[in-house]
Length: 314
Ligand SMILES: Cc1cc2nc3c(=O)[nH]c(=O)nc-3n(C[C@H](O)[C@H](O)[C@H](O)COP(=O)(O)O)c2cc1C
Image 1 (cartoon, rainbow, N blue to C red):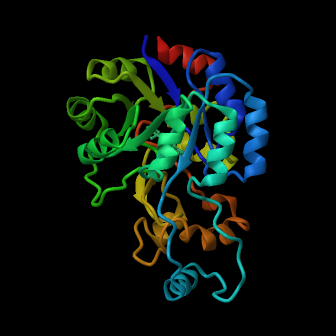
Image 2 (spheres, protein in one colour):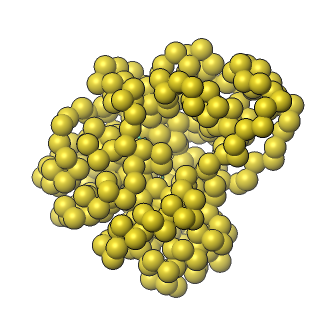
């Protein structure tokens, strides 16, 4: 049987979704990029010893650029002199490493490359599988050479942030990227992007995937903690765009007035994740601002996460 992995989705889910999926025979994921160490401890306590994938970002910390920050705030209509909260997306670090080693999850997966080699080696030595996303064959080869046990082939269809970490984004679709990566690496390959039902799972398997990682289809489940505005957008809109206006990095979501007005791509956006600081100040006043992350295959349903997992495993 092919493994069904519920994609980690920072900002829209906590341990309850992962628990439902793992208890239904899939692999649940907990996105940790936006959690404080205290919040992470709390979610890990809920998970207990069941299998889980803990997911972290490992972007290079940005260099603050006050001139750019000011231009961005003025573009958004945010007071350029206001003191705003620090960005809530942090890269994997020593604190996270120690929390992870103490919990011993089945898998730790990364987005935007890999952390420093001693972290990767330490996780593997502890018997934890290390995975990361690749959006090109070059990235897959890099991850294979740097010790990844599995490579998530993330196609252009995928919802949320693109994991691209080795310059220019080649924008390859899942079913073109997947067989090319399968042929290029020794590690096992997981397909992600545009897979939302058992047909898609079978297709990914036929192309050499050993598992599938599914995000957008789980957004319709009651366990997903998305805003009413996000849920309504998933129901009513069929369009998605690639935009950098929420965080400074490209991600796929449903366009709303904010995305269309400021982007979808803006050269003013500060480096990831600094663009999110001013946007968060605006979001606090208006939940319809988004982001409404979603992939190109928008399957809207009313299944629980357990029922969706069972159906996908078909
Ligand atoms: C709302 C949302 C949030 C996401 N957040 C993360 C994240 O925190 N970490 C990560 O590795 N991938 C994240 N992704 C990307 C997924 O891991 C996966 O690549 C994608 O959902 C697969 O495509 P699909 O949405 O068409 O199923 C996110 C995707 C969505 C839809």
